[in-house]
Length: 116
Ligand code: HEC
Image (cartoon, rainbow, N blue to C red; front, side, top):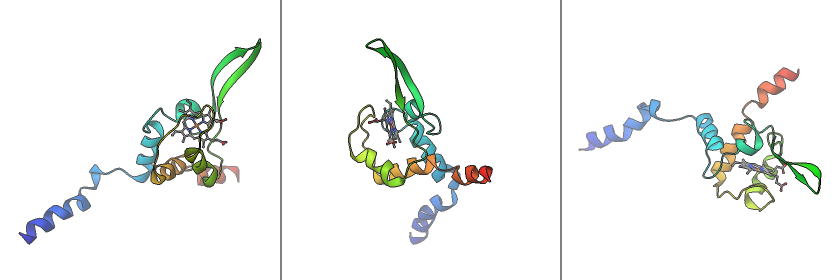
C-alpha cells in the first residue's frame, strides 16, 4: 500500500510534459486573464496602443491604453488594488499580478543587451 501511494505521489514529478512553465503561464494570463485580454488595450507586449479614435466637441481624441512594460512593480501592483478610469476592474491574486509583470518584462535582459 505504501508503495502504491509513493508511486501516485511521484507521478507529477516525472510527468512534467503536462505542466506549463512560468513563462507559458504568464503569457496565458496576459492573453486570457479572468476578464478581457490586457493586450486588446495595452498592445501585444504591453507597448501601449490606441484603442479607439473619436470626436468630442469637434476635436479628434483617442482612447489610449498606456504603455505598461516600463513601470515599476509597485506602480503596476497598485493599478489592480485601486480603481482607475478606462481600465477594467480585475480581481487578480498577488501571484497573478506577479506573473503578468513577469510576462511584460521577460525580454528586458534581451532589450538591454540590444541597446549596448
Ligand atoms: C478595456 C481596455 C483595457 C484593458 C482590457 C486593460 N487595460 Fe490596463 N488600462 C487601460 C486604460 C484606459 C488605462 C489608463 C487608466 C487611466 O488613465 O486611469 C490603463 C492603465 C493600466 C495600467 C497603469 C499604467 C500607468 O502608467 O499608470 C496598468 C499597469 C495596466 N493598465 C495593466 C493592465 C493589465 C495587466 C491588464 C490585463 C489584466 C489590463 N491593463 C487590461 C485600459 C485597459
